[in-house]
Image 1: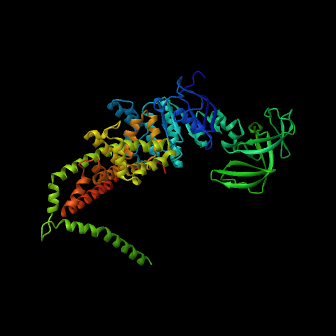
Image 2: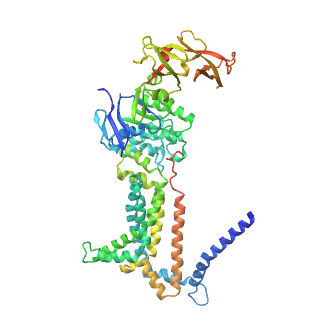
Image 3: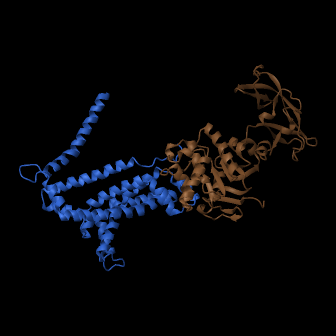
Length: 354
Length: 264
């Protein structure tokens, strides 16, 4: 961890008797894009605000570039931040907003103008320098807020749900733009979101938070495919959960709806007769028998939803319902409700939730 | 039904208009009768030509400007801080700012005379400048309910917390935040408070009279007690001044920065 640029060590935050962040640890490498993902009230924004200096940790330490900033005021941290509510100064034009931090830092006027022009080009709004915030759309305002945060060349960029107030289409295009700007500048970035798709699509790593703790920190691939806890598995992506009973612990066999499924090395010390929650992503399941899939279950199709390119099928397996997606094939009609079918999957894709 | 409603609305409007306008017209008509047998602006000419009018009016305008500056200096940071960091104290601060409405000016000024007399530890009343300063302080107290409410309403239209944090994270200290971010965004509200303060100071009698300062209020009272037509002319002038202030507030409100910091 000697290389970590931002280091959050054993941080705790309490408001009165309520502890909102507990024992939070994270080490972020230089130039890394890390997302804090979690439901409302999980403490993700509080951690971000502690990094920004707006909240003081009750315990623990925050280091930026090897310097302890735990008790440093926000205006001394050289950190850039973009807020959910844009927070552009209504009385200043776009150019004046972007120049605000430069002016505060005492940069000569000519250099300020040059830097503002650079920033407006970076966010692809060079023609809007003279406009006021109320004359811009939400997406444009947030891009200006990003330019304003980046103008003073901060060491660290903090993004507090910057896309939440925007409509769906703008969110997607702006998140890609944020990621591309972040990559081109190589700036270490923390991004707070409750939108898993956002976090999965643009992050180098994700810290999934719940109840003030980091449940799992990992790459999007790890978080999605190898969730460490039941909460992470449920929160990130769609999940089918099946109840199983360990039938042969020695051989790693579990009985699911009177059918045996082999779980190689995943039983984690469970004993015969133990009940387990087994999870499967919809995309890991195939309708019918798939070559290479070593596990299968029999059931009956209970629902079929035609979504255009994709058909979502729900199959009743014993007392549970399993969701799976198949691609639409114009030459084959969609499966029918009531049809008996097998579903197959690789037992390796089964997750045992602890 | 709709027609009947409109009729009542017009009647109410007419009664209200008569109630307000008739005394005004009567005062104006009376002020024009200084010369026997003809209407003229003689009373206005006499008032404007009076050196006492000019002196007292200038004095009150200067006092009003200092009162406004002191009011802004006290109220803007207070209202801002209460909104940002101590919202739980808001009812208490509001109560304190309302006190000048229930405590008569005469009580306040007697308190001042007792507290800041020549034998006190802070003898404001020992010098003319000191008395002028005390008058400005007293007027700031009288204008507090209006100034505080105006500024607080202005602060309500902006996202004070986020704007403050946005400025802080870019390196700004408190003077920069208040001077460059908060004040410009509540400027129209501050101006509204300033014009109300101006109107109060211009017409105030009790404090100026008991502190023996040559202000416009005591001059108006003195004139009213001794002359016939000039007080009516002065009343119309004072009325026009107040209206001028109100129009200025409305005009400046058009230039208020549009709040774009709240997404919805």
